[in-house]
Image (cartoon, rainbow, N blue to C red; front, side, top):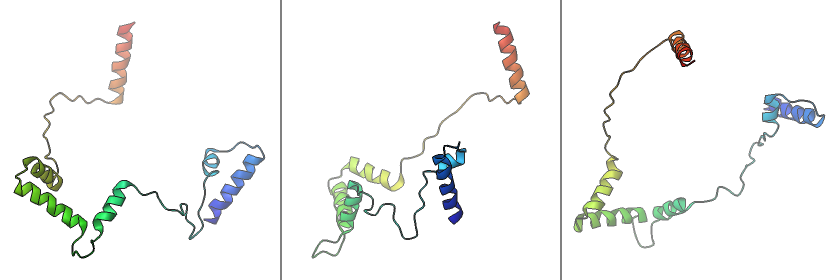
Length: 130
């Protein structure tokens, strides 16, 4: 780790002197090595609406024994079954099994050639177009 730090310092000094830099030096010059225990993002990552919803669903409401996620799943399943909601049932099914794989029929001829054969075809084509 110390050798890369030295390499970074050397590249910065070389740049300050106006000397030309190699590709590696140009790449590492802006590299920042974090010290052990130092965070590059002390405030943490910004939370998304999805992560907030997931966090809320993991909570158990006061006076209840099951999470909000369990209550949500139960409510969705009950609606699908009691109201015989076919669209909701299909949506649940898709989330359980995923969409079925579709077969694709591919027909055609596959030609194989060596590089020399390809080059000859290109040369012939160029000669015929003149």
